[in-house]
Length: 536
Image 1 (cartoon, helix red, strand yellow):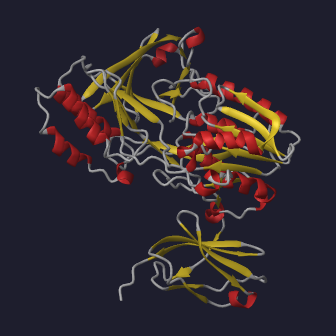
Image 2 (tube, helix red, strand yellow):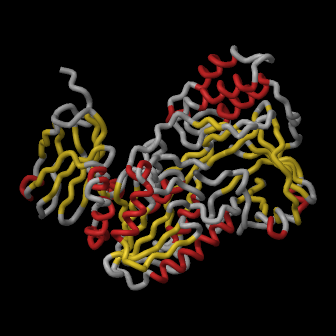
Image 3 (cartoon, one colour):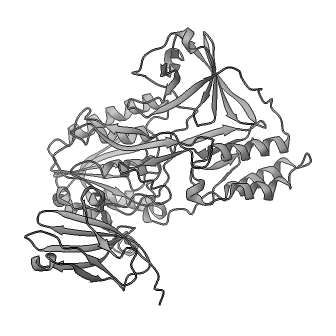
């Protein structure tokens, strides 16, 4: 789960504060399917498609301050003639930009008309769904299939089932529909298969009874944050089961999380290393992932960026805006940190795994995350039903989108079900404990795009590759990884072999994509590889 854009839209702004007169008028959002009408004392918010305008709610304004007293949500600002609403957060999370428009479209009145509700439902995905090119869903074909089945006599149950079947085409955990009886239908996404999905209670009990130091465990925020030490206080352990702490607005939630983290990291002052366990964390506020990242970095740095889908076409997106972490509060730096992930780690936790790869001396370990990144956009229908969709795409610092793929850990450690059930051993945690002293020295898959590129040919290849001569006065290790990060080939190369073109036989590898990494004493070199099918 990630923050719901409607519930947590607006917050503190460091930008120029516009006066009330400049804010007045009609504003259409760039992406997100939103429309705003602003008067002297009020912001009226609507959801919008090219065929609909549906009221969401009204928020009082005092100047450019949105909300009052305990309900104060933030400020509006004007940037380059655009209205800017920043999300409620103590860290910059981007925001929503609106263009001024001269008139307001006609408001859709509440109605149970099946045809009208179906058309608005389909059009919202058509204009704002961000994942069509990834999910390979033919949305027009879905319209052609189902629109002919809907007329004025279609019952609520029939309409709900049809919309549910259409949502079922999306392999997206952020996509679902809820009717007025609070019945819900989600996407057809396969559930996680890992141990943290199947045996969460067993793993937590084992942690408490076997691994952490006796009497040295603290619980925060209804047990969503747990801190302890391991190995007689030498290793700090921080378990986070959710990136939602208090379930209030995002700003207050960030503040509560910040207070907990300052307490926790103060208690870890004398530890020699830290394990952050998010294997059972299904998400929350992605701003909280960066609140945590702020405590692990010594410098302000970009950790990822995101774009919003624009309605012009499936491939039309806003310019990416960068999201950063910056040193804040009680820091935990210059010591090894291991972040444990699993296929349960999703949404905001996907984002945390992505940003962790950018921080020095932080190593991700375990299994690949689930791969659900976008914030949830919740949209109403005229009949009162609600549905959600993903309208954004997240990009790592190299501009790569890992939606549906997940974040491959730096060190891939597969979960061992037999060890857990028979031997009562958490093999991933034990591997982290045994190797934490080396965490700062890991040469990880994450480093591949940051090192020197080398020429490899042919590429694509079918049997073998040729690697051009490398000028280096040391021996080398040549390693090939598959796209999951698993090592599938390794060859030791002597110095003299590097001085001439080398032919490497990779005929045993299956057809697919790979990463080639050559590590010498002085440098790390890499190339992306594609193995094609044998045409002989």
